[in-house]
Amino acid sequence: MNFEHHIQSIEKSLANWEIPQESKNLVEPIRYLLSLGGKRIRPVLTLLGHELFNGNPEQVISQALAVEVFHNFSLMHDDIMDNAPLRRGKQTVHEKWNVNAAVLSGDGMMILSYDLLLKNQEDKFVELFRCFNQTAWEVCVGQQMDMDFEKREDVSLDEYLEMIRLKTAVLLGCALRLGAIAANASKEDQEHLRLFGEHLGLSFQLRDDYLDAYGDPEKFGKQVGGDIISDKKTYLYLHTANHEDESIPAELKSLHGNSDDPNAKITSTLHLFSKSKADAMTLAKSEAFYESALDHLNAISVSDDKKMALRNLASFLLERES
Image (cartoon, rainbow, N blue to C red; front, side, top):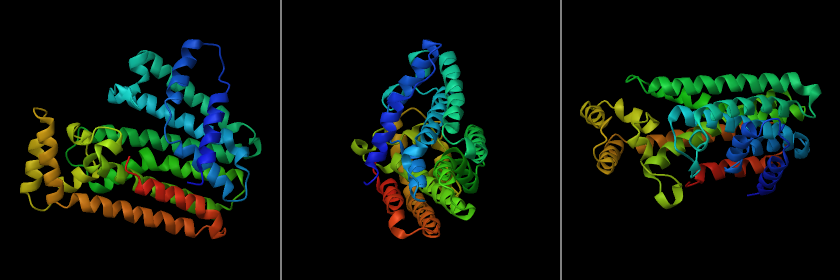
């Protein structure tokens, strides 16, 4: 991958980030969560979005960090709502400290992300702020939709796609657009780049749904079938639940909420996914969004060689097995 140096730059900048030190108890959970790592895809996108238009990526390091800090803020609060014990194989903040500490440190991360967004880009702040703030709100709406879906049995495939667009994909689009804004890209190019990121994010999440059910446990990095055990309404589940053969949704519904034998539940559910062709449909939908993302990338008015890093990143995300 030709963006490894960007990842290294992000890691170095995070390690050197000077967080206000008035309260050790407020800062320690922030440092802890950021130290757990991750792919750093979102901040790398900001650097690549800037570089695409001849910008120097070092000029938008702070904006890239703003994206990563915001992303981790959302994870800190998501873990509370999901009552998740682990994040990247380590204790979640609310487990290591307590819920109050996770709420307050998460709030602090949100505030600090705005401070990072402003740094060295005062002349572009209004544009950057509007993009960032709209995205922050959309991520919250997506999270609320996800929670609402837990109580509903009539969720449609289109609603699910809108939920993952908001909860996951819009931040990828915003990350890229922030870099483009700082590089003085045209509004048209900014929009194509944003849509490239969004559609790539949709493809990524659908691929993640598939890997959760069918991935290699040794490569996937988390329990295969976890979404099935948790009764998550993924694209696979909803495609099967809306199948025209009524016996398939009926059998799927009988498994929903059943926790007596998790392995048997996974096996039976996977059989229904395959029977309804949800596995093939999910991969096909992921591929369609991937192709649409590339169409938007192709439409940007810069030379093809400058787009190579983004093409490589898109390919990496689609072909991953973990």
